Length: 217
Ligand SMILES: *Cc1c(COP(=O)(O)O)cnc(C)c1O
Image (tube, rainbow, N blue to C red; front, side):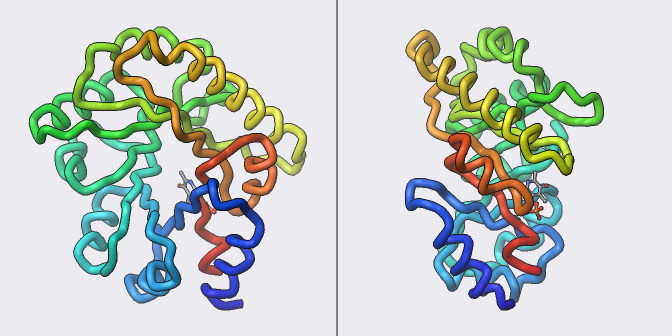
């Protein structure tokens, strides 16, 4: 299978209002350029250094997404380069994004990474702590909370995955219904689904899927 064939299949399997973020970690600039030339302009990297290395080399109107755990001291390198940060998982990180956003006169779009299953090994904020998190950042003018992101636990059992996605979708709807209480919350995105589980994520309401291996392998 070629990159283009894989993209044909993925694009045919989803509706237009679902955005594909092509996850380009560990891929060469030539491989990434084929994805962009095909017409996929949303690219995801999970490391700051790798994103910076590729930033000037990939040609086109690319929107870069930072999807992996982000260290606070690296925010300054990407604040003016990324379209959306999917992986905000602590108050410390939100504070720094706000600081850098204000400094650069940017309202940085962010998603809060949620640890739905409560696995200790996972990054993300527990679902029952999100509302107090939103309260603690409600005065931050340098960022805008655009939604939520999660990674399902690795499991052979599809139904376990489905419940993670369904819970986050329900929670996302709940927050959306009260977003007028906040000046910096504007829910537009639910980032769920990778190569293994994106069809289920879409069934459960994802509108932003992050696919790597399914494109490049
Ligand atoms: C690598 C990665 C993906 C893509 O995973 P695939 O299994 O290659 O589709 C999605 N999201 C995050 C946060 C990743 O690090």
